[in-house]
Image (cartoon, rainbow, N blue to C red; front, top):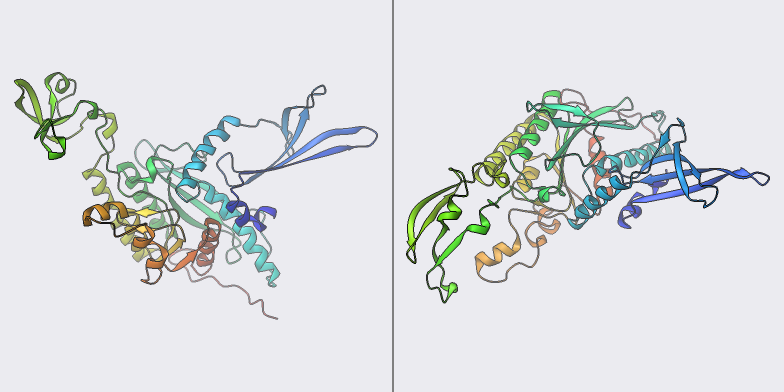
Length: 422
């Protein structure tokens, strides 16, 4: 209740953990137990609540062991996990967003609020015991999606997907939705081949079941990578050695460096520079290099076309909504527009390229921020954005508001509630 009531304030203040310690005992026996109540995001879930009995060292008073208040089983405080999650949380905040798995906890908090509002308005339906559950959809070795309950932060792909079950006032028995989210802490949330494949399969999963598809968008567009292993060895033949500002004639590898790499890494031809045999680079393929695994350019753009086409198909078959948090670039911006509804956070621009690149192209300083290109002052008047919110907590609330008018599946009728008017 406390987290639901003060969620916006807690998020704005960047509160990651709240702990209360309650001493249990009497004046005669003094304290016999300590009850530790915690609401924490340090494990990757948004302000997850736990209750532990804490045992202290009788000499120093320092906590030495913990047990679950309900089951009595031994428990530990995972400081290493908390450290990893804190790094990811800070990266997401720097991008103006929230770490993707924490949106699941925020949905649960908002469901508590929605039920409270419903009951206060006179609603008679009983509040279910279990308001929210989720399973992650992860790719198996054969490429198909399987359900998983792994801990947050275990992904090696910059897109995450979940099937979530929400008990709402409209559907107290529960309704399923599919959430697809960019993980901005993984390669800036960019789309590569693996990300495109997971996005496409998760969207297909939603279409096959007629479920609403929610995209939480915070990304850097299609990934344009570099063959990092080559970079230290590439040299330039300057037009004038004494004045590099006049440009270069070609890029090349010295013979020794050329032989370091397998065939297929570059396409090159022999030339002579200062009487020394070199290999002039015509194109970089990057085949077999670790840095190019999963594509560095054309492959990723091909994947962008794949998920754009998939989103267009989903538009015609199921309810599709994008929530833009932080930023959404390139194919990320297109995906939002190709959906049926867009909710935009006030600090979440939708752009095709950055303002700095456009200024260089124009040869003068025309733009000073991303908001001039795709901020709410552009996207709301032109009709791309349907709802503007001030924070991620408000964004989650707006998602649930829209779902309240959305059928359980594409083949169902819209939900009905008994009137609460006197």
